Image (tube, rainbow, N blue to C red):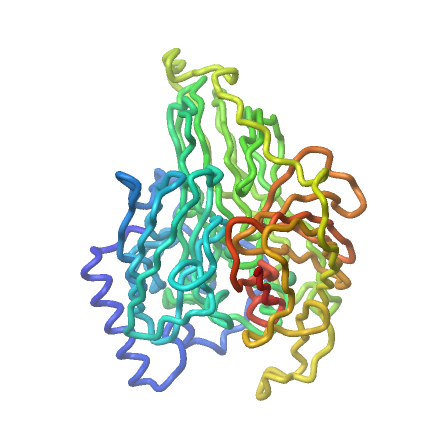
Length: 503
Ligand code: C2O
Ligand code: CU
Ligand code: CU
């Protein structure tokens, strides 16, 4: 997590690339590709126990001024500490996570992405309601090794405040690059201040290290299941310590950047109020005891501290699996994210703002009463494949949407700009798939036959194993080609993705 220095990290990155060329191998961080997973459980492959109890670090923050934020993101291998161990990971600007970007509605964000890897990458701003075309959130563009690209995103003046994130989106490499450390937070600030004593950006990730401190390679079985790393990390740390005074109210911005792990979160003995998830903000905070974040989801949470020590847990979550996977690869794993220690004198009255001090948000538009221009069904399936990837990958399952694997050249869904559609997401497989649509947020209408009642906006909707979900989407503000996919990013890389064009 703490880099030696950005300059040294870049030098280390250069050496890493050279070593790969000399060795003639593939990705330098997966040289030990013969290692087999050793099943679920704590610890890391062949290494010492992760360091615990260190104070929480946060990523560097970059804030827009006068409606603009301009930055360079250097994508490169680097030496960082992950879970207390020296690691060779992939970094944005030398750190894991990359810097947090703080924006306001109406801002223009300019990012020069510099590719210091030895393979293609690119940049996606997950959840932002911005154009998918040209030099904006265009995932069809590849930035080749040694090249740079200038992205420019314009947030509409009414962009929903909330928690978003950025990560690479070059098809076929997304899971590996995120697993190796490429992700960072984006916050779109509220128009009105919510009084809190502390605001924390909590980026959750998981990865697996080999005995040499490299990011471990994963097996074809782990890809099919969706890999879950042996190290569960919060801002790159293992079980960091968060401290607060009794009565303090904190705001936790939680992002699930894990490739495949679901986070069923609990913090017992503390008062939790959910402000919203993804781009969806409730009019009033909702008291919660437990929170499920599928891969890609975010939560905006208020925590009112009560004296004592609470463990911030991720509990086991049953996301299903194929019969042959069970017991072979880690799936549905639990872990400890952090320890929250509350003691000392009661917070000053100005810190301990009462819940009533949160200004209500105007209710979001309810698409349940909107005129629906088209209804579609998208079927998410896993089926026996013929190992079309050839050599060594025989027996690979096919991951499809409406029977087809992803092809960049094909447009699967064409939508009339400005209309509202209703999509039924059908899962015919024995595993959950978190369905993600770029650019246009979804309103969840029905979840496995249950009416959702309130206005629930999401950009990742979990579709239960052998279950279904119904969403409505307003295709407003932006046209162009983009994608929808399973946010178990191994599944996306294996083909569970489709192309949408709004015109
Ligand atoms: Cu977070 Cu298309 O992805
Ligand atoms: Cu996305
Ligand atoms: Cu999936």
